[in-house]
Image (cartoon, rainbow, N blue to C red; front, top):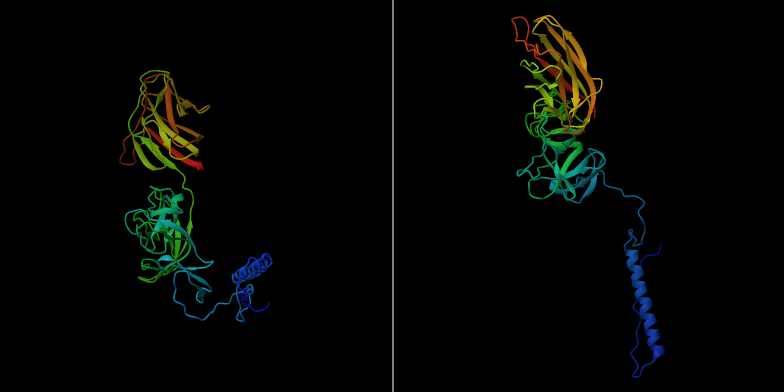
Length: 377
């Protein structure tokens, strides 16, 4: 390629006293040629220029791999420690290209979210997600987890960066050892724990401790997010007898033993699913007879007020004061906020769902014990 040479302005003669169309056309042609040259040079100047002043396309860019560069917003330089390029960003954040990934996030919590805080989804605004400190106590779905803040983010309307993969530095990790797996804390919002939580708390692996230090600690973020399954165990701890024979009664529950996404509804015979899915319904009912006459007891499951076909179990009782447990189990598909009920009926009113108090050698026995477990999302 030749060097770029500025175009030479044409020599425009003085205008004649009288209008001459031939001369006017010559002047117009000269000006047209000159400005075409200017336009062409403008287009050429938008391409890179080498040391000789020649327009050329880049084949590659070499960065100085030994230079010590002060990070700055918009600055690109070689990082000799991580062996990659650094990009200077807002809030003094420096991204290692190919080794870190960020989500652009906003903060409307009313307070500053500190660097190193575990955050989860809290809504959305223009061009970004909103985040808030995440607590793994079961109050928020595991799917809401996002990552770890890589700088202090004030509630100022400005957007910042949440690390979803890669290093977060400058933390107090003195409570952990190098190599510890770090979980979202179920007790302190936005914090880590190296003790795996247990149900009903959520188990969310967020990071690993790389450097244990009170001020210069480093973690590597890689959230492992699994959709939490819903479950619940419920009991009836008081007796219940039918008022009439051959009449269906819904069993009301008075105790929640453990629950995550499945709750006792209104009335308390309704067990409500908070998430859609297939649920394994298992209930143990403890019956006792009030006299020696023979009687049949029916136990079954209803979904949204409709009997589940072929779910009935029948037991015959005759001995007065004897106990007889009945077990009913079905797999039932439920949508969000749909419910199941446990039903029973008897051919004799001298029968009871019976709770037994604890003894010196054995714990108490509920009249009914129901386990609801989501087996498919």
